[in-house]
Image (tube, rainbow, N blue to C red; front, top):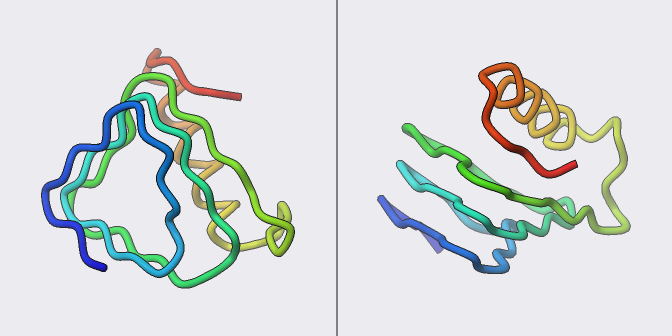
Length: 83
């Protein structure tokens, strides 16, 4: 499914198999099990978001590295992030 300009607030969101363009995640639990995923445009993470990794994902997975780096960037700007 493609999400365009959608704002997810306080939701549990399964990322696999979807495309997110210009979306916002605010206070969500995002789950990722290693499937296809695409972020386009200005998709952003605000507030206290948390990610749950599936059994097929470890720290060497490209998305895990990207997401971890993105959260480090948010932390540097002084915004809250989930550990």
